[in-house]
Image 1: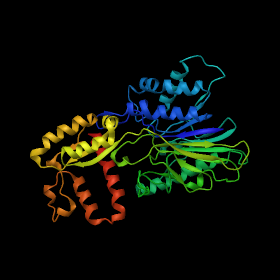
Image 2 (image 1 turned 180 degrees about the vertical axis):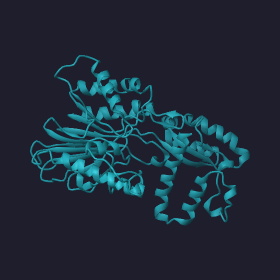
Image 3 (image 1 turned 135 degrees about the vertical axis):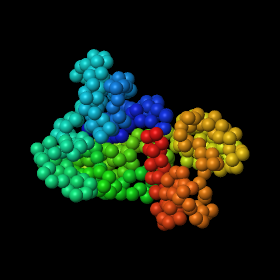
Image 4 (image 1 turned 30 degrees about the vertical axis):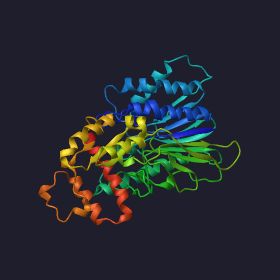
Length: 409
């Protein structure tokens, strides 16, 4: 069996006031379908967070968004398996199945749509699939038929305890498969030791952020074809395990913190005879450009536009900081918004001189009463106090936090 592993589509996500659906529907998802068809895969596995959030319009949007690309794959005899993530809902998946099956005639000569919405084991085309969707603590308690009489004292201890119970579920499911036969384990959540962020200096998740699954609970038999397919973390990465273990990452850049990230899918082939699977990371060719630039004059703006080309300017998101004198900033502000139409109306997308913090070399003392934005304090602290090898990763993480704060407002 040949598999395309992807995750974290986040259909319906916004950047500021900008709806990101067109980025996915017009470029990322068609590129994935094109890869699946050209590579003649047997199944596409989406490991959670297909949608960003569920609203009153989510059901209709789900049908409209995925009906055509999913039907194209199913008509090409490619199975589709969907694993719910923390942003997805089980009723939405059930409706999606109905909406897709209503289009065209169903017959045995088409691919099948599988909704892996429970912690269980399913066999598809000769491969055993251990599927573990994102589970909240109350769902984990229910599966184990467990009650908590006394909670630990800290949130970190709570997450450690919930993670231990999640390990029990994963290990129980793993024990139900025949380890002499090909197997796949798919999980949406955090694995201990995984990294976040698009750059090489990304930092490890800590226990206070979420409960985690131990890597020892994944498939481990390197004497047979096995693969661990993960979702939830947006950084594409391979975890160091005896069995190939990958987060496929998100299919497009979602914030300024991911401006250098190269979205990908993972192609996985289970050999008819052989002990190891073969895999390849395949990068998607048309990611959304994200900007984080300083512009002083129209000449620098022109050079940026030349580098991005007209299509890149049309699609670009992010932030541009104007470093010119305030008297010149208004005209340059208008020129920037004309050059990058998706920045218009987005809070904080273009910062004029009155918003610019002092450069680190110019900072001597800071009066906390003069600070309007606490992000300035954090940025200054990173610039002055943190070692050089950590600055890039911290600034990238801070940019992501700023974008999330802007989206919330």
